[in-house]
Length: 204
Image: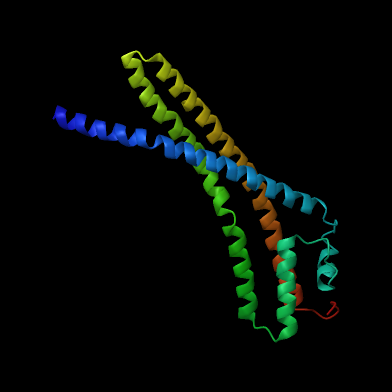
C-alpha cells in the first residue's frame, strides 16, 4: 500500500512540476492581452466621451429624424445604418428585424466572454503559479538547498501579483463595458421601434 501511495504521489508531483512553465507562459500571454485590451478600452472610452450630449426627451426625435450623428456609439450607429438600408431597400418583415436585433445583442454580449474568462483565469493561474513552486521549494528545503528555495519563493509571489493584476484589470474593464453594452442595447431597441414602426408625426 505504501509503494502504491508513493507511486501516485510521484506522478502527481511530476504533473504539478510540468505545469509550471505552461502556467508562466499563460500568465505572460494573459498580461499582454489585458494590456492590449486596455488600450482598445481607452479608445472606446475616448470615443464615448466625445459623443454629443442628448437628453432623454430629444433622443427619440433625433434618431427618428436621422440626426443621430455624434450621439450614438459606433456599434449602435452601424446597426442603425444597416436597419435603414434594410427598410429602404424592401418591405422588411418583423422576423428579419427581430433577427437583426437578436443577432446584434448576441454578438455584443459574446464580445464580453473573453473578459469574463480573464476575470477568473488570471487569479487561478496566479494561484497555480504560487502553489507549484511552493511544492518544489519545500522539497529543496528538505535537502538544504536554500538557493533553490529562494528562487521558487520569488516565482511563487510574483505569479500571484501578476495573476491578481490580470483579474482586477479585466474585472474593472468588464464592469464598465457591461454598462456600455446595456446602454447600447437600450438605444438599439429604441431606434428599431422608431424606424420600423414610425408613428404619425414622426420624421420619415
